[in-house]
Image (cartoon, rainbow, N blue to C red; front, side):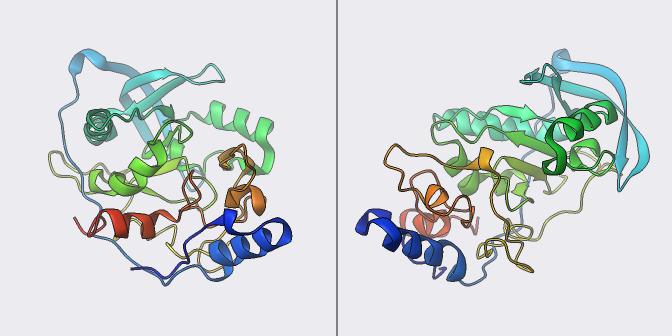
Length: 265
């Protein structure tokens, strides 16, 4: 069990809250921890949902090949089709279905990105967007989810690694990558290496704005907001350990108490 103090920002007011929250979520974040290796539950994609659209892939700035078969998950807020390679869909849909069975709707907000779309994001978002050719979305294995809805982020933190999806960007709660096993199909040449733990890339104890623990001030669009203004994200302007959930609790500790062994399955 980690040693991060329980967050109770209502226990104090004013600068005292600021000090308590900052220490709890950054400086004194708990001991490092690992989880069971991310898995992967395979389900053959429905052929009626497959879209054929040959698109170039990129990794580390270089063109690496072409992906041709995708499933469409709607249209993004910028008017782009949300496409996910069928090789990833085979593991993504079982996770979406499992969440739905628990009453949680997982909404995919971004999948594969063309060079043109990544260039557009770079122009519009500046330094907050990856350089064109370097985004894992252009390689094919990255998927963004809405984490703002009812129970979505908590469900994913607790369960996504079982389906092979892990967080890889400390300041982005919405960004997940398929880093699981490949039972059911041959591992594609463009796939990312399998992760050793759900905390491999975003450490459970990541210190905000510090290295080498992968700490980073959360992007404002990832903040949790509450009407009382007492959430750690608000108190520290995003300088929180991003395993903190919408209720202000540090989720690994919360799940240790509520679901013992949750990260060892």
